[in-house]
Image (tube, rainbow, N blue to C red; front, top):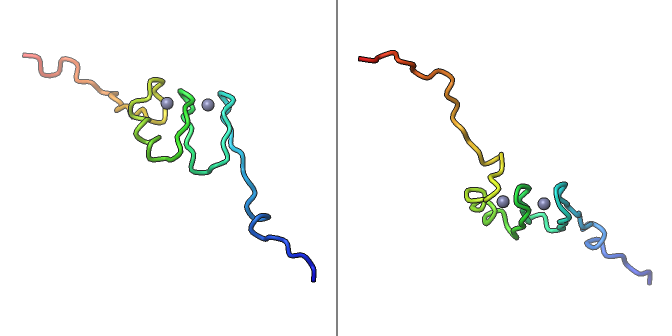
Length: 77
Ligand SMILES: [Zn+2]
Ligand SMILES: [Zn+2]
């Protein structure tokens, strides 16, 4: 009786993700890493809240409203 290989073990190859800005690495795909202040969260939900109050202010969270045309003394009385 030949030994069976475990297909699950072969299919689940751990993917190591890393940050280009620090030495952090993680294998859990659910892990969220802030590329601005370099903290890690076990889930995206916590990370989502962090983005709002991240001290490093990540660019992806910045939503600036462009003001190209400001009224300059148009209706000055
Ligand atoms: Zn952050
Ligand atoms: Zn990092």
